[in-house]
Image (cartoon, rainbow, N blue to C red; front, top):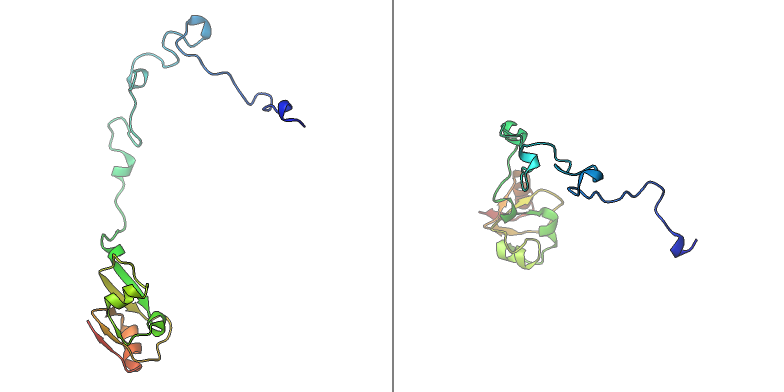
Length: 144
């Protein structure tokens, strides 16, 4: 096989339609657009989801679910993450410096994933019931 002998398969390509170029082309006069109506006009088409003025499907169907506006500003930290931190007094700033939370985070919560065996004290950070129990069992404290 040579590069100059490569060609598309038979019937794979068709000539471009030259619309509005006279009766002999088969696409003269109305150029395949039919007679009258919105779709026959230049620039006359509709947006995605438009149903001719009828209430569109995406507006007829009920809304479902909930998207929290504050979700990206709330951080989540596990007990295993706290175990790995070298400091004993833990607040939002120390978690950000350790790289456990993003810089945009405004509040955080500790979840009971992993184990905590050392004493830590949380300041200004929330904790789930299980996480609070694990922290207090290890001799730590939670002050929100």
